[in-house]
Structures are given as structure tokens and as C-alpha cells.
Image (tube, rainbow, N blue to C red; front, side, top):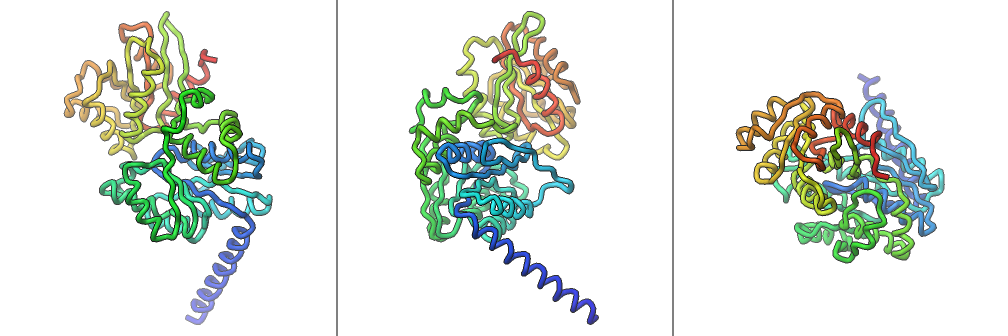
Length: 388
């Protein structure tokens, strides 16, 4: 019994020492930007870091999304290897690393999902000076739901205390402001209408005005001129989950594959399905490839629910739960002659299926999730891309 008590005291003492050591490392970084939200976190992390670097600030950044990356002061990056899966304690190591490199600004994408972990990540670990919320949408309802209000309040756990907060979220902004006021934090709305179409043409991938306006406002907070920040953002490496369009030609047919797997909630996916066809007005047909996963059945159903009232020519089901999702599509009254179950598929098999449509120029959307079968399909079209 005495041994257990002594062991407990030793454990508490060790934890206390480690925590105070962490606070020391954190105190050596003048500014930490903590980025949370439903969609666009990785892209906004990269945009902000690129803008700050262009403004001469020694900036280190870390993304979590589709493929975690540590981005150095030069803009070069390296993958983060996880031997035991994702854990928010990873942020402690990044803060220590940035401290030892005398970073002026550390830009961190939030790792936590559950409300409790989000609060701990911000108020006990990151302690940001600038908070960022990309948007608040219905996602991870199993831990943050059941509704939009609950999701928003969960995400608001990362609003800093006595700091600055920036968001491009408009719909639930009043609720966010109420939480920010309690935290003694000033909150600002980044209006995407301030971004011109000409400014968006500098990106070599599909970027969103909401992301750009948010990143520019944060950079302005640090004194970086708009033009300087934008030039830095144009040169930044896009996230692996960023929406890109690849051109593939075979059988005298053109397939424009829009990699939109990362936009895996219905609202974000709908935005892309409506936006990208406006960029390619000479297309003859729209095909969708939905990547299904055994651990994301609810998300696949959400996307099929969304497609039930949309116009498209073909739905290709790939991945792990194709048969179940085909049955669900039938329940939602999606015409079965449009639905094609090809199981776990290669990129070539997806392309061949899409080309069965009687059209010469096809816009093929990848939706659902990049994990599993999605990544293989993206790699196929990326490696064969003829659109320079």
C-alpha cells in the first residue's frame, strides 16, 4: 500500500514538472495561432503560415488533416510519422520544437474532436494568442452533436482567453461572439466578399474565398500587407486534401477529375458540386465517385441524402460499403440506372466506368473521404494529369 502511495506521488510530481516545462517552452513563442473549424483547417493553416513568412516573420506551422505535415520557416515541409495513431499530446512536441528554433509565430491546426479535448488542447496546451474558426457545420455528430448549436459550442472550446479571434463563419457568428465575449476575446468576421475574382486567379488549385479572406485578416493582424501576404499564399504548397482538377484522356474522351474527397460533409461537398462546373462550362456530363468506408457509413448516407435532390449523370460507388450504399441510394429514390457499384477499385477502373457515359467531356467528382480507396484514385489521376 505504501508503495502505491509513493508511486502515485512520484507520478504526480513527474507530471507537474513536465507541465511546467511545457509552459516554459510555450512562453518562449511570442504568438501561437490555433486553427479550428469543420472544413478548411489545413488549407487555412498553410495560407496563414505562407502569408506570415512572406511578411518576414519566422513562422513554423503544423497541419493535421489528410496527411499531417510540419512546415518549416522556409516553407519546406516534412511528414509527421505517427507510430501509435493521432494524439493531442503531439502538439506539446511541436511547441517544444518551435520554441527551440526561436519561432516568432507558431500556426497549429487543432487536433482534438471531442469537446473536452478541444478545451484541454487550447486552454492547457496551446494557449493561443490568436484563434481562428474556419466554419461551423454538421460533422462528427456522434461526439459533438446532435445539432449545429452543439457543434458550434464544441468548436468554441478553442476560443482563446483575452486574445483575438477570426472567423469566416457567418450563420452562427452571434453564438460564437457570445462565447468569445465571456472569454474576454475580441472576435472578427472575415468577409469573403472582400476577395476579388482576380485575386483568386493566382492559386493553382481550387481555393475558397472564405479561406483566403480569413488568412488575409490574420496576416493583417500581424502587420503583413495584403499584397505581400497574397504573393506568399500563391507560392504555398497546397494541402494533400485541397481540391484540384486533373485532366485525363483515353478512348478519345476527356475526364476532368475533381479531387474533392476532403470536403466530406454534405454542405462543403454541395458547394464544390455547384462551383466547379462553373469553371468548366464545356463539359457534357457529371459523374460522381463516392468512396465508402466501414467506419464512415453515416457520412456516406449523408452524402447520398444530399444527392437525392441534385442533378447528375452517374454515381460510382467504390470502397468498403458499396452494396449497402447502393441499397440506401435506392431507398432515397436515386434512379438505379445511374448507380454503379464497382467495389474496391483502381483509378483505371473508375475512369473506365465514367467513360461509359455517352459524352466526350466528363467532369468526375471524387467525394466521400480520401482514406482507403480514395487515395488510390487520387494518385492515379494525379500521376496521369495532362493539365499543366
